[in-house]
Image (cartoon, rainbow, N blue to C red; front, top):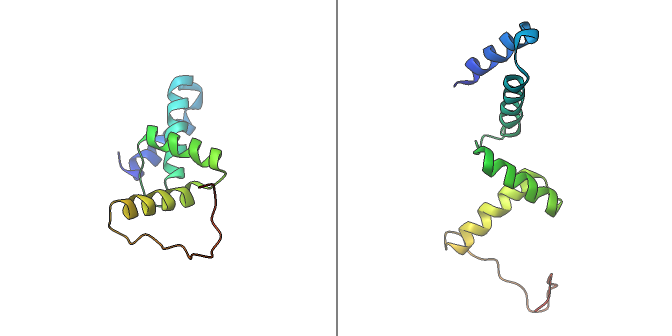
Length: 96
């Protein structure tokens, strides 16, 4: 469904709100939330979107920063990007 078709469906629903079932309205609102949440240009499947949202909340990061980090780490581990080298005298996070 294109964005224009979806926007038309939302407009139609708003015009006949009393005639729409609660379940249909709930579905439309969830789809709207997903589309608005994916405005950065990356369309995610609903289950992936939910997992990213939960992880970003757990890590106290916004979704966009988390996605950047996940993609960067995946590219580094796959050998597509160089892994940054730590300085010998530099500070590190975590325990060895």
